[in-house]
Image (cartoon, rainbow over all chains, first blue to last red; front, side):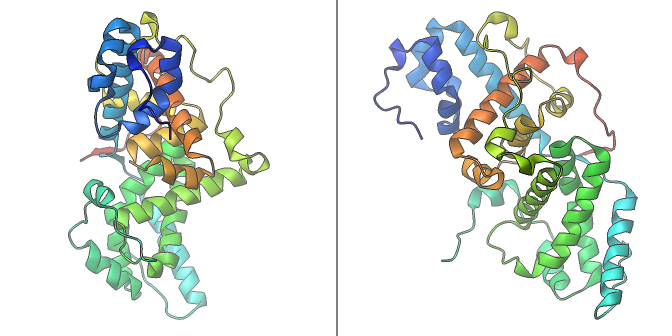
Length: 100
Length: 212
């Protein structure tokens, strides 16, 4: 993990910012990078970089919402599972009747 | 050494009513309890497979494999993490094994999760013409994620959607933590490019969506 304690954020170039960005995002996961006071002056002076940070934050935040968005598998999936388990148990100890 | 439960994962995957009892009964071979576990978790497991694989048929096959594997491994679940987190990790590992069997095992994963130059995000990441016009809706983002190169999609889904940490992803993908962070960043940059032209994104493959 990079140590940013000695980095002068105010004099950072856009290219340096690009280089540090993956680590900056990873280290600031508890808060928004766009609201990091260390970056305030740099982002004000570099509106394209500020827009980039905002866009990537928007993408990451919207992605969290995908977690609750679910798809339903077909009924065939359970039928196959139940058949396979029945076959396995028929060959072993006790037969298992798995009807959902 | 006993592993401490991860409070963050419990927060994201809170225990479901009746789940603990179903787990204990299923461990003792109760078929109804296993059926209940399937009903509780089939959507999450299937959706995870679908996002990682981008293909309905393969996702259904892997969902089947995940639950068959669960049936065999349930006895080893000790409740140190949320059951759904444990099941998701099991599913991710099965999907990765499946992908390696399809051909990824011939090259190191460090290389295979790096897409070709053509798929990589463009270098002019900061210019105004790559900026998003505003907010992003979930359906459009889902379609854009499905359009990502597999390596980018994998890291993005695991980190930004499923909530795994970079060190966990690095372990699962057998790559460095730095590589995971770098791939995630490139995935987000690529999504930014794709989301600028939502009309050019392909339709999602499955429409049996259930939003909770």
